[in-house]
Image 1 (cartoon, rainbow, N blue to C red):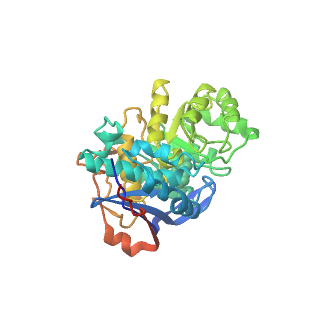
Image 2: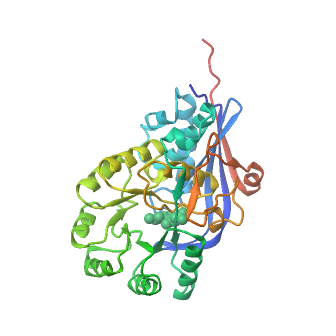
Image 3: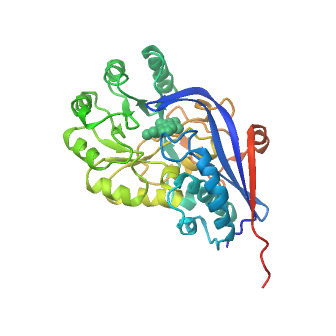
Length: 376
Ligand code: OSB
Ligand code: MG
């Protein structure tokens, strides 16, 4: 049985090395909630991927903070805790708030891996020794800058280029990129920028042989994505819409998508991420690991998850240096010239968390402690 003595919440502020623009806006720096579990002299970390605003999902750092402090942390401290997989049951009474739940659950799995002295990837059921990597490239100030960025990422070895798109930054961009690189693995991510009236527009992208079109329509929709998928050749990939295994089953059954982006924060933690992975695998639907501009803590967890067998497409899991002047783990995440990350084989997440650096970035903190346990 795992015993958590204290849960430390902190907010760190980190400027992004490169601003990131999507159809919902520009991000220049991150406000990130980190959770740290203290257990019998061991320390385990989790990263909450909720954003600065409720734009990608209805969670944001401030809602995650209050839910963690007032609801989730006290439950975790009070519960019988055999392992990471017991977290969904412990949190069940709290509806939604999956990114807040995931930060704690993932930290518990990290702790369990340390206690069991096994790599986190192995504990999750991972089988890959390396994972294939792609990059997500934000909307750029100019086409020239986009072309330069793509050239840089391809030269670095990344296996797949994903372009953020929206009205006014789509067809022409795809045309220009394909004219220069006819064969590369190319995809796009609309973050719900389109509607059914754009059907013909989206169907015209079939000529670009995209690997997939990610989340073209509403963030909470399966029905219209299914309508759209029937009318285009290119595979739809759902990101925002897939909250859990049941959503994955519904989307696969309705043919709302042919590929699924798994984000461990979006689905509420490793348990549900594994369940989505397995449900997709059983139905022949490939998955890949999405990213949320994570620090090394979340990135390390994404690497472990990506080692599961059905993560067969390159993920948005890329090098630390693409996001941060200096990451908060040691070593930083690096990608080989073949576009692969090596899955660590040491116990736990395989990365050392740089506490001093985190201290320097911390702007807010709070500790929730276990109530004194009454001796029987
Ligand atoms: O939709 O995949 C997305 C970043 C923040 C919020 C949503 C998304 C993204 C990305 C970036 O595409 C992925 C990454 O490189 O971390
Ligand atoms: Mg996406």
